[in-house]
Length: 617
Image 1 (tube, helix red, strand yellow):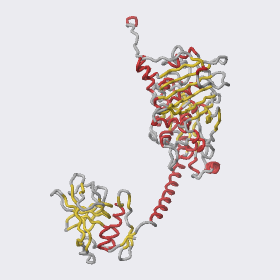
Image 2 (cartoon, rainbow, N blue to C red):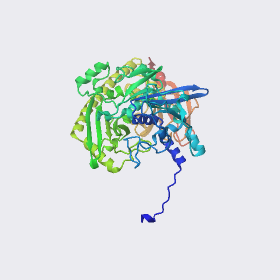
Image 3 (tube, rainbow, N blue to C red):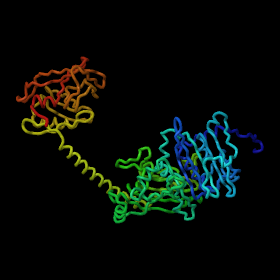
Image 4 (tube, rainbow, N blue to C red):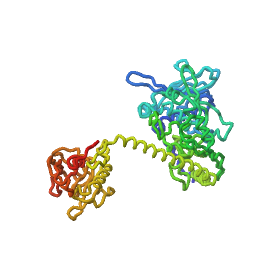
């Protein structure tokens, strides 16, 4: 049967496929993930990264420079860097020789740029060489193919590898298109870059927890506005692990060690209080809870194994090292740089120790996505298969994923983890109770302070009623209700109607009895031109003040309209003889449609002054 099959070569539109791979990396910051990984894969122990902006006429140029002391790129492997799926990290049988970064797609994220320059020194006895690629996306669009330069002598480049490097590699990316707009430029800020490097790149891997012999390297980083970071987070009092800064060639870099950061255990009152004192914090001690729960290599079916690490951490514990987490209080850090607990904390899938994606949903019967913000947990499995842009492990076979998920669920439901979560929740509940008490106390103080400045309505009987608060949208409706109720309690027969019911949940505010029939009265703090109910059903309006003048038109939700009429010397009608027939300014809405009756507007501010004789103090 096989001999009868017709042999037809599959056709591939190489230019189009290359273009799609280049565009597949939707997040430009992945440039740093790919470049750092390549450096470590080539044995680098020192990786420099510098972002700079040079002003030019009519705009600016953005440069990303990354260099290392690794083995460099040999001349024969130049096509692997510039080509597609030509990784040096796979065997002739297309099996990966490395745990991560073997698809041959990674460097293509660099190509969505105006210019890419590489300088390599693979031999300590030679000066090295360079290659330039100019606007590959435009080349692909215009010619369905792109070409890069022949090898260029290193002396023709304006930058050099450090002279102490026996071997090394230098990458310059000029004007990556996704960084040309301010919308994405914030990612180049030093605060953001250091956070990304220590969470989503090889410099944030978790393998150091399980392997003492793992390759050790350091990142020397300079993002935009590094001086702001140095001035505001340059000490142990501001950030967990005081940053290390070095100066080289008149430039300042932050030195970041390899490996993800996990805080030491602080799980009892004594250790938490000692830490609060040591860092000079004014926060509550139980916000600094932290505890290592699980750190073990787990095995599942078919010989698959994974490393699992689980820490539980308090609100301030996370923010001591993850300074871009949003806070309850205001900070000077731009919102674009920040992320929430729900975006960052929970259960993460890793490959090669590097966090790839958050997978809270793997915990079967768990608390739901986003419910594990107190959890700092990672599943690291070399059997995971990544998508082309390395943003997900969804390419992994179900025969691998399902046993891993089952094991994770088993661990999360174990007595050890359940007890730890309950302990963490105890401190969390204590924190929430404390916060509620403190918030209530603060609100009480603020409202008392405000009440001392509040204006009062002084009645003729010497009683004082608080005047409704004036807000940006008018007088407070709820406080107008309080005033009306208090006014009626002082003068029960003031109006010729009695309140039968008050309820705002269904739209009708007051039901009153008038002549033996129920009527509907609408309550407003300040009456304005737009009404959110139908005028058909409204008998009267009660408000504290009115923002309308003679002949102004009021429109309801049906677009029915009524014009305001004001009578400056009208007679007030009241069951109380003290007030009956007193002169006052009356207001009435006269509808345009015969289907709507005229509506009196009871303006309490006018009645208090003209009828009752009250004064506002």
